[in-house]
Image (cartoon, rainbow, N blue to C red; front, side, top):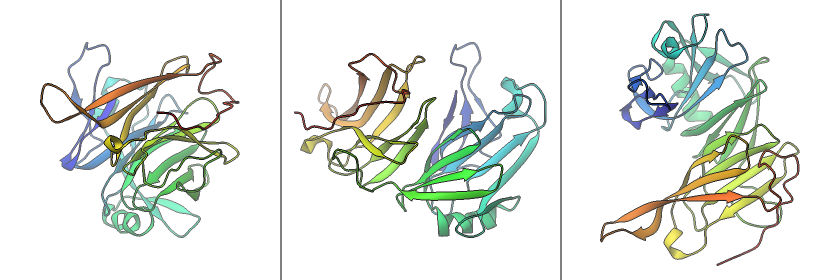
Length: 266
């Protein structure tokens, strides 16, 4: 597992999910930054490529390419090349060894990058400041973009900052939301249709943030959290809560047909 620290001198850590190794700081974070998320292009098992986002206007989306060899726990603590994303115009991009150039580019085109994911040669990420989804074709150095706050099929609203981003094995790209009156989880399918998966209603959720989005290995369970949840425990301040979702038909959230129906509920 890889986990990012989101403060001025944050780092990226790798954690053994089985607890056999102690957590270790990786080389991904360099001298530190407001890191948000990591994605991996694993098409070449001998040279997986890692991408890290930075939630800062003048941040830099970085790419780390390790030396070729069988990937292992030591891959992210060994030698490699770090490059930074630079948009050349509204259609093409390149990778630069100069982070200053990349920071200027991010501040202009995609400030405050949050979630990131990779699938089938496409790198997806979101800018919470611009409310925009970007899709980079890594093989052709071209990109497209689309707003995240457009109308949703069947109702619902996704008007605030996109946060976490997950592309599963199926046709759906999932988003979490930071802030607003109805924070929730949303999805867009391969045809571009947008859906509200769930939303929270009630004053206690105003300004909350959905986070921790994950799926069971077979895709039949979806997990998500509210960061505050408007609850109190033993007189302490707000505490988070985790929710579990499943489909009534028992099928996977990766499935080609979701048959989503939107309705209000208490």
